[in-house]
Length: 217
Image (cartoon, rainbow, N blue to C red; front, side, top):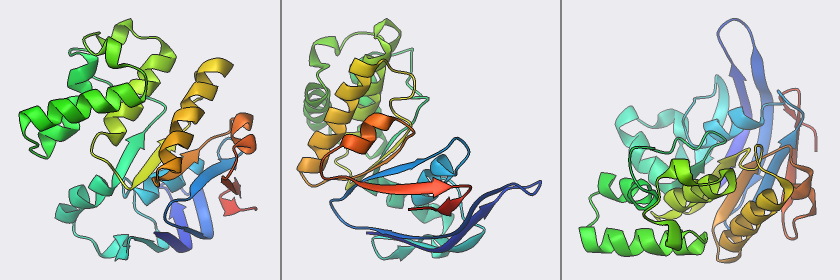
């Protein structure tokens, strides 16, 4: 599903975030990208989703070489992904339900179908009873669950998350990992960049450890 060959990422000013990264992630896997702060975890996740482009090597997603994709094709590629970031980028001028409806509005889903799918996504993360709440009224863990509902409402094949438990207490973090594991169990490919030691104990998961921009294990 995702294959990296000799991938490197060098930023202006000379900072090398990744160097000669070679890895494969298969359909239906759950993979934790781990490593020290600055190891390149977030950069690798952004490269997978073509949010950033590599400066060396190639990344192939579902048979498509990202380097060969035209800019106009990127939004269609990203429909394969559900994206969850540490900064959830929630919209605080609308309800939780409206936040989840937004991706469906972008792709032109009929209103009644969109409502049904958004409510189902909220139900999966345990927030259906907070559908009318403004995100500012939700706890940190609830906001992260709302971000996950928005990420999965389009039924993506790949769920990408960057430090989704970084600002949460231990119980909330465990609950978020349970949600990701539930999606993995129904066939979604789940890739999580994290330094959270709880991830190391997840059954059925594979670790991809980075050190100073290179694959360490």
